[in-house]
Length: 310
DNA sequence: AATTCGGGGGC
DNA sequence: GCCCCAGAATT
Image (cartoon, rainbow, N blue to C red; front, side, top):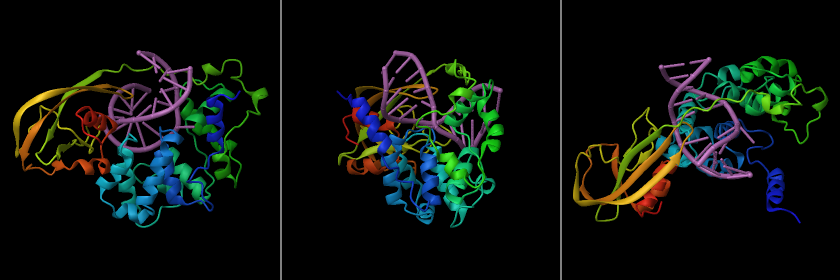
């Protein structure tokens, strides 16, 4: 009997990745590579489809308001990726540069993404190192210390000239170099496991204020803060200039979200209010507009806890 | 060289 | 609940 797990695996392996068009499109390659940073293929695909539908070209992305870009990124995490994507689209001036060195100048292009776009979409002979490459090379060569940095040093020598794109994208269905792999007998030892940092608890109280017509009061989170630039329920401690509370707040419950470096816990309250916010970062949002707004996953959890579909 | 920045899936 | 992770920017 086949397990459902096996079937799921089989389906995943057969799946067509929508950014692997022929010929390869630089814009699409770029978007997919950025979305795939720290994010699984299965999660990315629907986001990619929606994003490409809304921003089919570099120019469309450059012309779009940042808020629209963040809205399409809502739930994907690491929102600076979206802000940098937008900034880079505007800086590119109509077309992406064709070399890794030049791409590296654009915001959001680190060593990996620059090499990926240059080799996959423009055919440049440059190697790349992602987490997988670093791990494989760490095992094959028994690298200790900073495997990623050493892998970048080794990679150019492994690159078949003229086929960098093909080489960089290849994935191992089976390992054919076991016999020369120096980490074979202790694969878990290479690369050295990282020590995990503590995860301090970050806690605040937020309030879902509803106007008589059902609109919800949302605030834009400040830059350089967690979820920077995303919309959220206002914390009860912040001032709400122009907004008047109508009646008491009632507690609706607690929502939590585990992030890489923090555990976040938000106590959600609800109440009624009215008035005209005297700030661009504070606005009433109709219940039907919530789904097309740049909200973090935690913000959506908070809204649902307050009984608001989003 | 460390720290920060989200989130979901496997078990 | 605890594990993992397909990077970049900042300090």
